[in-house]
Length: 432
Image (cartoon, rainbow, N blue to C red):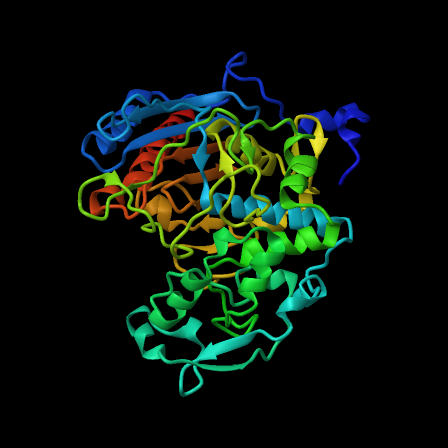
């Protein structure tokens, strides 16, 4: 953890943002927020989402825009605002990655450390391949059923911490579309493990979907990364988040475990063309169960398990926007944050590239009218979404809680961001 030099050397305060709420005038003003309200309202009114809440904050934490809308037929007696607690799922990943990078800065971890240094239970992991030796991770989506039954071969490379960060280690979710693999992962029901040790014990029985380091395949890699951080420090991921992020930077609204007295929005599905409460087991990313958010459950899923408010998550994003510092505390070095949004994987993708689990948009987003180039973008399993605009120095969060989006729901982020940037481009053109 870094010494709080920003409190010692006043000139550094120029690079630090503090939460000022609405007391100060935002650095950006949108000329027509009603148009943005109408976009969100329409998606809810047409039954595409059970609720939506969007929030934009500038570098100093001033609210540029916020609006919420709830379908009261789906969620009677519930309201949404910037303090509503939301299951953020994969928006947890970038939080865990920053913890790992902080430990790397301190020399506690290294990018090239073998994962087995911290999780020796993984020494005998095997790789699932087709009968002709192809890695399952490299199969076309419409040909994945050809993988069953698969064969097991030794992993021909050493799995490293960097592989976990870049989703190159070979772990996956129970949604690969390979029936014989998905059923295996579902069968060990990882979210019900009592703690990290039991989670690792169960996962050690599963094959990898590729030889580590050969390609990137999205999955529970970041959750394993969080467990590496736990083993390296002797602390839980919950402790690491509190001690290194939320407490020193005074971030409220980002944590593991449900706060006392809070009732979460129930899961909603659009699977049957109309919105309804999700059936038990329908959110099948792990199989039959999902994280329970019980504060007494000592299992902290670094890739999926956090809760946040839009206000709290925006604060975390502002730390990234400020290149590692927030509220007088430096968490990460500037060079480390620059590495987060530097190109690492998906380098041949025409729409952008992946940093460390952070999508950086290409110019196609501007051309298509969906935003701008150079945005840092991410999201979660139940329709949460965020982005950081380093050029204009603001962050955006869109919150909902829904799985199996209907076709009419797919345009939400492009429509909303597209209108934000249409207004910003007009302002910038007028200033030229």
